[in-house]
Amino acid sequence: MPLSTRDVVGVLADNLRLRGSVLPISSRRATRWARDLSLPRGGETVLYTGTMYQLIPYIERLVRLEELLGDSRLARLSGLARRANRLVNAVAVVARPRPAEREEYDRVPANVARLLQLAGVEFGYLYEDDLYAGALAYDLGADEAVAAHARRIAGVFRAHGVREAITIDPHTTNMLRSVFPRLVEGYDVRVRSYLEVLADSSLPVRRKVGRGVVIHDSCVYARAEHVIEAPRHLLEAAGLDVGEPERSRAATWCCGGPAESLYPSKALAVASKRVEQLGEVAADCVTMCPICLVNLRKAANGRMSFRDISEYLLEASLGSDEARGPSPAPGTAPAAAPLARTW
Image (cartoon, rainbow, N blue to C red; front, side):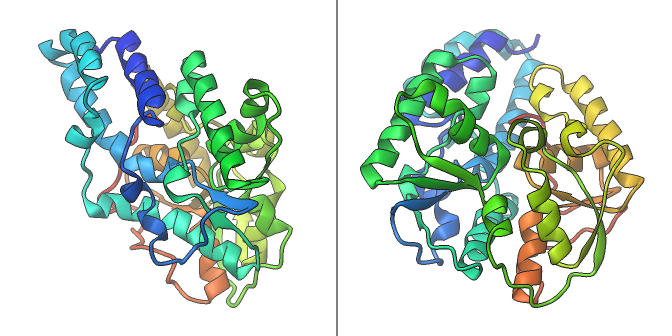
């Protein structure tokens, strides 16, 4: 029997209420990417990751466990597991991804910070106060937990004197920019995606990348936050030939991620259709969301290459391949490929 949806959502809401994240990891682990960048603490403008990229490998480990339990008699004990989780952080016990699984996702916030530095943007970082923004709990209807968490983050911003937050993924952008103002009275923090910030700045290009790619728009960026032209402007300035798939911009096709925790087969079908559309344009795809990255990569099963936009931009700005990890060739499975399912 499958795990109880009520208990799964309950565990996520409990974690957000008790520990500040639906999937709590230590602040040391969440901020590891910044250890060599000497970022100042706090300030009026901060880079806010919301730990979305950092959480992906932990989500993947828990998803594998959920799949195993859902096919066993232990699924009947999900209520007991929820009660135990209120006392002990289960993530710290069962979700321990290998360093190779964490490397790619830690690289993205570091790439973004370096891009902002290269563009001359002054910003700080909140370190242990860079909290998960609550997107998954919000989408699953855990309204009370999300509202309390929104007030908690607003209080963090006030304590640090934050007036502007630069975000690195669409879901954190949407929560801080469009959801929090409805939940927190007097919330007035300016929120911009780093792509918008870079598009308005003078990001240097030391070497044109010179590669044809297909772009995949995040549903949340394109439809909810209207971040459409900025990534295209940046990619073209970096020397990339950007191809448009059959469905793009505000009419983009979903990666399948939001539905996968409840309807995995349907979500995989959606993602597979998207891979088919993307593959008709180019073998290399640019993503700008950690959920899109892992779900499309899973559906492609090695038939295409998927990389975060930050890697392409930093490659052009540095004039080297330093920003890029090992690049699997089309037709081969990537090393330590994530088994994406939900966010």
